[in-house]
Amino acid sequence: MSVDYAIIGNNASILISRLSPFGNILDVCNVIKRVTSKNVDEFIAIFITTQILTIVDHLHSCMIIHADIKPDNFLLMKPLSLGCSTLSVQLIDFGVSIDLKLFPKKTAFKKVVKTESFTCIEMLENRSWTFQPDLYGVAGTTHVMLFGRYMEVQKDTDNWYIKTRMPRYFRKNLWDNYFSTLLNISDCEVMPNLQTLRNMLLSEINDNSKYFREKLNEFNQTLLSL
Image (cartoon, rainbow, N blue to C red; front, side, top):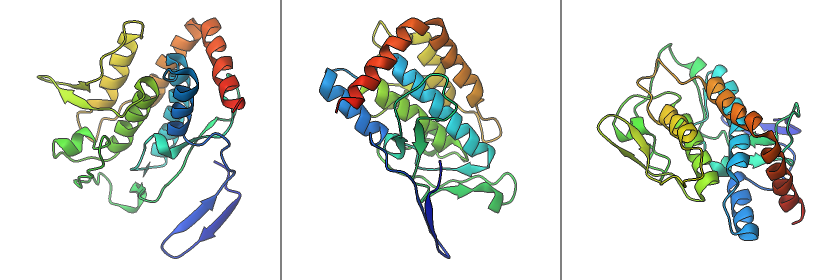
């Protein structure tokens, strides 16, 4: 994000950037639902998710846990554009973020945050966590785009998975892989490769480029018509 203005205090800072003309991802989902009576198209959800993965991967490479990732905290700053060097999505609200560089190496946390629909697997199982809440939030944000409601999870013998039933026309194998990767993290030492996930999603777009471009134009036209 670009910071146009900042107020810096001893124990808190306010970063001010350009106003989003479209609101956050939850706002966008609600607008699309109201105008089209449908959820965000699967390919639009794929594309926005690739941008979210890019942002979160960069944040984690800086050793920062956002700790409050949800659809409300991603702003859509401009219409979606394929091949543009700047992202359309912006992550906001770092009020509870954790800078791991300020802690001893291999520090992990045990606090349980009971925000409905955004309590990660490690908290549910009383295990230590570092970046896992962010990854759970990424999965939850994608879920809202795909299905129009917050994510609920359940566990079979070994693995956690989403409760929501996939429509038959969805790319089930892709989404099973995506959600399973983000929900089933063995420990704090082995995090999923977010660029690998991103490339998997981009490959789906490239394989269906004509259809995707049609949906991209429809999506942008809907937002710009309001």
